[in-house]
Image 1 (tube, rainbow, N blue to C red):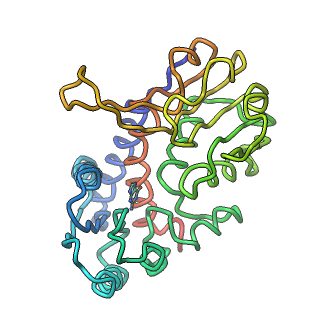
Image 2: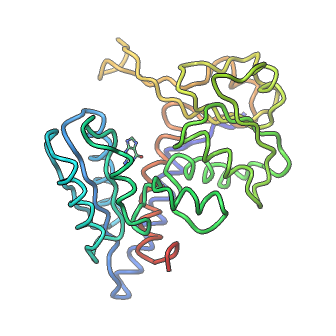
Length: 291
Ligand code: GUN
């Protein structure tokens, strides 16, 4: 069984990005610039955004953090997006989600210039991905595809079961895994799927992204399967300094011994997401997606 090391892979990807930035600097080019908009003081969002800003520094990007209080109006936020859209120095930006209830996330995301939507959430980027055109791919699906590639996991003709149909994990994963060149036969399962256990037991590759802790059990997985765990449920723990620990959607101790490859939680898919965002920002600064 190979334990897929997302932390190490993310560090490698980030050092490759840092090398590119050095080359850009040496050639007198413009340094990639990522901006992040954070509304309110949600603990999780603060941590995520701080991690993104820190990662920018690590690879030599310029970063800008724009903060608003919870009571910012939708119009003010849309105005901020419009300014970032037209700011020629900003290559890409994200608006950290979730937003307060009085602001439409959908409206905000759709107001972002798709050419700067390095989160890959805008319908134009989703549509371009579905059509197999160059697109910004959102961080989690991009990170998983990168792990599959870098660990040279065979995909052509393999039976792949994706559990969960969310817009940011399951649905894009089902599309990316079935695209030409990857060539999996994909079954997308969800809460209404019948005989899930029997379907999973046929799978060469399982992507578990339904958000139920330790859902995938040993008896649902065939010998030699590849298991990608996208779950991150936070549970109280008296064994960690923070008082919390992260649990995946896979019952690791039952499933791992049967696998050819498996991602752990933490340290699997999670660390790849920041590297994905940086990679998209680099692509944007090089005008590689939108010419
Ligand atoms: N909230 C949780 N994950 C994400 C993400 O990847 N992007 C944004 N914008 N918000 C998030």
